[in-house]
Image 1: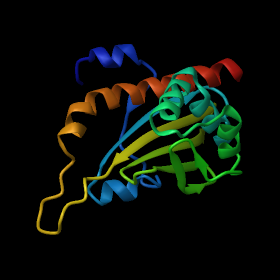
Image 2: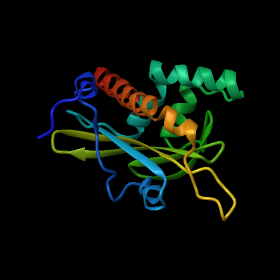
Image 3: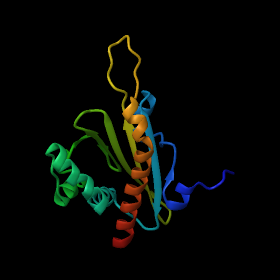
Length: 178
């Protein structure tokens, strides 16, 4: 048994985990991209649409949406987040839907370098929620090795923290409404 880590104490209900085999994001792990996965549990039934809506409408994610509107002129609204959750739109802020199923949503950023993935799975007495990301290596000439780049390495710690914060914010939002 490993000793508790400070990050585990900060996020007691958000755990890193392997990607489930059925995850739409797993195609990128198999292709050699960086992937991660975080999970939490809600002690009540939660629809996938409610999870997607909660995730993209938290105050924390609204800050990201504000930054995207300012930095790359890609605005989004809570109404658009609900439409995305209900499969009534194929784009949201800086992402487009790459794939979806009844309980999963896989989004691709406008540059094609990152993916965001959400999945909900009913469990006895509740719902298991998953969030994961994939970052693809920079495209290089055929002879050059594929690398993630210095910027990726420098930002990886922040990305992991931010991912846990996003899942935690969605979890709190769902708990407040269920």
